[in-house]
Structures are given as structure tokens and as C-alpha cells.
Image 1: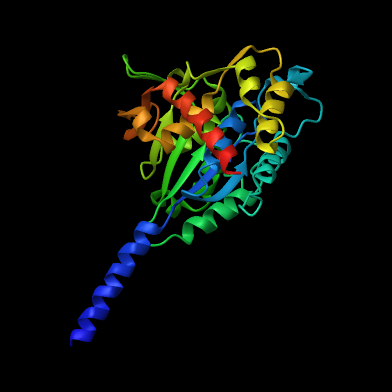
Image 2 (image 1 turned 90 degrees about the vertical axis):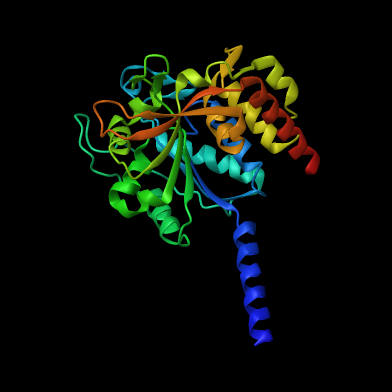
Length: 315
């Protein structure tokens, strides 16, 4: 009898210990090829690989109307441009620099959900297939944290293909605009414009737990070009990529808002951001989502550079 009781106690403690020791699973979806802030955001997350189980890094398209009428988008000629391929290549460069190519890194959809006039037809891709597979393998009560910092196509498509995964996700994103004082949403923002259908699909799904970093909240998290160059040591592959990304994408910009880093840092360090529960836009299904209404910009700035320095010293 005593042996049975002791065995039960040991088993119980083993279950508790394993539950505590289990790392939170995270998926990161990014239009890495679009501009330079994405690489800083993904770098920040990958530096925490020992604390989180990063189960996927996927690529998102950055299609937009300007690609049809201008000769260049940042450093890329627009003729024949394949935005999803560019994002995929940039993702792989950074994963290689970190030595983390074993992390699943499937390519996402090459265009928005539905059509130009609307609709919610999903865009299946390697990303949606793998994401659904990861979610369906989660333990009872476990959730996957998904950070997406580009168009919503991949995430919305995965849920549209397999609606049952919605309740097993926590979404974190950078996109849209929200006026805290007047409680007004504004979808006039690049990431949202990249797939308005996808964003509306997510807003219309009340099963989703969602944390949104609006554009207004990110403003102020700026990096100075010369200061950034001086902090990066090009002999380290990761830091060399960070510097080259600025040089290639926005060489004439003396400062840049590092929008996406704010979303990642708010996820990693919740006390650096203030969240408010607000109603979804009036044109969408009415329920509550979580909006970041304030961040400690200086602390986020310092956190990135201190973490990078510490990561360099570990290597």
C-alpha cells in the first residue's frame, strides 16, 4: 500500500515537473523581404531559443499595388518580382547565420486570401500544412503562440482550412491602427492592406485570442543608422546580416522605426507594454481583442542591444 502511494506521489511530481519544464511553443510568420525591421524582430526571438520552443519560421508575401506601377520596391526591381520567394530566402539566411536551419521554415502563400473584391477562400501552402500539423499535435490544454508581422494570409488561411485550430492559438501581430482616446479602428496600414480579407477573417472569428500592436504604439521605437552600425560587429554572421539589411534596403534613411521589434518584445517581455481589451471594428463580428496601447520604448531599445551583446558573448 505504502509503495503504491509513494509511486503515485512520484508520478504526480514527475507530471508537475515536466509541465513546468515544457517550453512554450512559438511560430513566427514574417514578410522578411519587405523591409529591414523584420530581421531585427526575428533576431530578437531567435536569441531566446533556449527559453522557447520555436517550432516554425514561415515566409509571408508583401504584395502591394505599388509593385504594378513603380520600377523598384526598396532595393528590388518590381518586374517579375516574387515577394514570397524573397521573404523565404531572407528567412533562410538568418536561420543559417544562427545555425538553426533545423527549425521548420516552410514557404507561405504567394497572394492574399480570396480576391481583390473580398471573399475568404484560403491559400494553402507548405506553411498552412505544417502549422496545422503542429497545432493538431499539441497536448490537451496546450496553445501555440503565433507571431505574425506581415500580411495575415498564412494564419487566416490555416484557420480557414482547419477551423478547429483557432481555439488552440494565441495570435500576436503588428498591424492596423487604433485610436485609444476615440476608440476608433483604422485599417489603413501596410500589413493590413497586404491582405484585408485575411484580417477581416480573423476579426470575424470570436474563437481567436489575439494581441495586436497598432502602428501608433510602435512609433518612437527608432534606431539611428550610424548608432546601429557602430553597435554591430560584422565579423559575427548575425550582426553582419543586420547591418547589410539596412545598407541594402534603406541606406539613405538616417533613422528607422523598427515596428516589428515592438510586437516581439511585447510578447517576450510583457511588462514593457500596456494592453487594453477593446471591441473589434464595427464592420466585423463584435467581440473583444487585446490591443497594445503603450510601450516602454527606451526599455525595448535597451533590451534588444543588451540581449544581442550577451548573445555575442555566449558565442
